[in-house]
Amino acid sequence: MSKLSNVMTGLSFGLVLILSQAGASDVLSSPEQTNNASGGLDYANAIPMDIRATFSEAAVQRVTEPVSFGEPGVSPGAKGNGEKLHEYLGEVGTVVSMQNVAVPSEHGTANRPYATTRVDMFGQRLSRKFPNRITGKLFFKKGTDTYVCSASSIKKGIVVTAAHCIYDNSADKFYTEWEFIPAFYADSKVGLKAPYGKYKSLKAWVPSAYANPTDNVVNDYDVGVLVMKKRPNPDTGTNMYPGERTGFYGYGWNGWGYTNGLNDGSIGLIHQLGYPVSHDHGWQMQANDSQAEKVTVNLGSGNTAMAIMIGSRETGGSSGGPWLFNYGQIGALSGTSAGTYPNNDIVVAVTSWGWGSDDPKEQGATPFTDDNVKLVVDGACSDTPDRCD
Image (cartoon, rainbow, N blue to C red; front, side):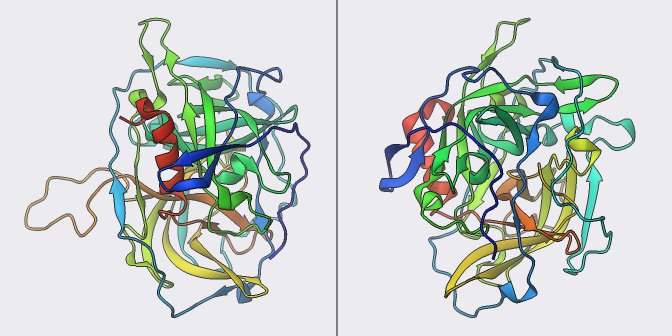
C-alpha cells in the first residue's frame, strides 16, 4: 500500500500520556484546547482531509484464521431534546477542489452495490431530524489552514471521528482547535448554517498504536474521540453538550451486529453519513447504503490490517462519518421479532480511507474493537465523566 500522503504544514504540539482503565500508554490525549488560538476557523474554505491508498485487488485477501477479540458489546444511544440554536456562520466560500480526482464512474469496478443520496431530498430538511442531526462536520486546524472531516456524537459530550482527523501520524503531533457542527447545512442562498450550534473541543484522544511508526493508510486504529465543551443558548440560557440537544448514537465493538463477528467474510448492512466535498461541495449531508464485508488487507512484508469495505460514491470530507447498523426506527412489531442485534443507530466504524483511483467506488474503515474505540471512549470518560453519564 502507499504511504500516507501529507501535503499540509502545521504547528508542533506535545503529547500527553493518560492512564486509562486498560493500562498506561494505551491511549494518547491532546493538550487542552484554547478558543481560536490560531485566529479562528475558516468554515467557508476548509480543505477536505483526503486519505487514499493505491488500488490493488491483490491487497484485499481472504484468510481462514478466526480473529480473537472479547465478547461483542454495545452502548445504546439517546434521542436528545432537539433544542435548536440556528447559528449563522457566514457566506459560502470558494468550492474546494479534490486532489487527484478522476472522472466519476457510476459503476464501481469493485462490484460492491451502493446507493448514495442527499439526506435533504427534494427540499426536505431531514438532516435536522433525529437521527441524522447527530452527524455533523468537524473543522480543525493544521497550522494556519482549516481542514474538515465528518463526525458524530456517541455520548452527550463525546464525538467520534477518524484518528487521522485528530492526529498527524507522519508528523507525530495532534491537530488543534476542533469544532463540531451537528447537522451542518449550507447553500448559496442561506449561507453556512449551524442549526444546533457549534461546539468546541476540550481534548482529543486516539489509540497510542495509531501513533506508532507505520504510515500505512490502512491500519487497525483509525478511530478517535473528542471531548466537547458545552454551548449556551443565548435565547434560553441553557448550556448543553451537543448530544444533549441532538441526541447521540450508540456504538458497538468486537463484531457487534456482523454475521460472523470480525472474521473475514462477515457481512452487515451499513448506513453511512458524512459530508464529502464531491457532493454538493460538502455543504450538505449525504447518505450511503451498502453491504459491508470484513476483509484483511495485505500491507506487505507480512503485515496485515482489518478493514470493513463498502461500496460508496463518497470521497474526501467524508472521513470520520459514522457507519451505522440498524439505522432508523423499528415499527410496531406483530408476528415477527427485531432480530439478533435489535439496537437502533449503532456506530460500528467511521469512514477511514478510499482508493486513489475513483473507479472502484469503494471505501474502507477500521472496525470498532476493544483495542481502539473502547480504549479511547473509556479513557475520555474516565478523565471527564460528566460527558458520559
